[in-house]
Amino acid sequence: MHYGSLIIFTVVLCITPGPNNLMVMASGLNFRHSEVYPQILGTTLGSFILCLSVGFFLQGIFTAYPGLRPFLGICTCIYLVFLAWKFFKVGFKRYGVDAERPITFFQSLFLQVVNPKVWAVATSMLSIYVYHPSGGERVMDVLIATTVFALSVFLTKLIWLYCGVYIKKYLTDSFYQRVFNIATAGFLVLTVVFVIIAY
Image (cartoon, rainbow, N blue to C red; front, side, top):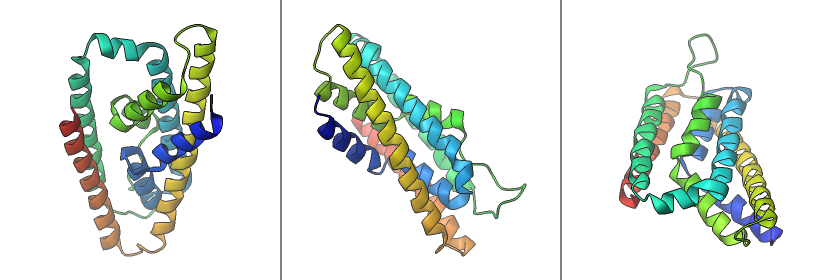
């Protein structure tokens, strides 16, 4: 396995804009950065589990039952619209009892099941870097590739989190913070459009 190429591949694909990155950055803007760590951990664990499942089980299932893909697309759209509504609804509130909490560990973990970008990255990565069709060598390749992928997810989400924290310094006016949240919701809805086109 070409480890250097694998690391570059996963980092580049994980750091590009997508639902996870937009939501982590918006959470970094709206909440204390320490409150966003469960969201990042949920995203990382969910991506790890999904990638591992694709490597060992799901590629064959989706090949055998292509009708599952549209069902996954519907679930994706419903969940992304729900998250878009949450960001549209939330205005910037100073930290206190009335502040809405960021996306939880379990919400972000579940999102990975219906996140088309994670599916695409996991499938393409495993197709490129896992060479052995069966046996112990394949198991080891899947484990290595999945671990590198999960680490890339974790590190790139930290980068997006601190982008949100940095932006907070400049969006001191609640109006601009509100605009940022609405824009995030708009990008998530735009993602839904792309999912519909893809499926």
